[in-house]
Length: 159
Image (cartoon, rainbow, N blue to C red; front, side):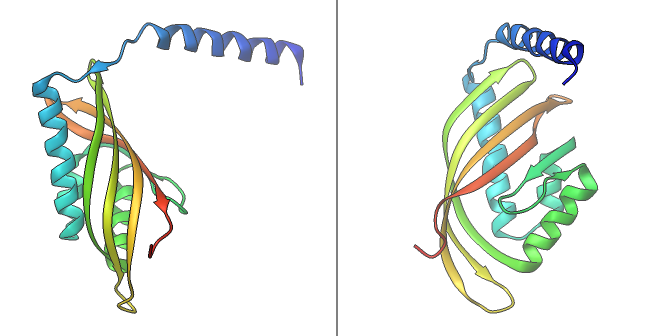
């Protein structure tokens, strides 16, 4: 690798680390925590009811959805298409458990887990599922929106 490019990258990473170090995340205050928990509950309900429109109302202007075993869906159209596929393929019934919510200005994050089951629509096969999730929220026009969302299984399906 070119030493100048390598040095430039190291300087850029160091500057990013220093800049991020000055952002102090703090546990969410009661008002923000309640608002973010409501977004998670509304998301849970929209998943159970297979409501793409309701899901998309919870997402930010420029969302990213990162499901396990699939490419990231980037942008509103791509995220919407991903949920159409999910709801056409699976019937979801789960419950989110919120473990942490932290806020830094107009950004927040939440760590959750979920438990429940899914049914494959084409075959009727049902399986229990458990996931770890990570949400990043952004405040837009005074309302918390899902900005980034990713999940992965924390136990094999069916157990």
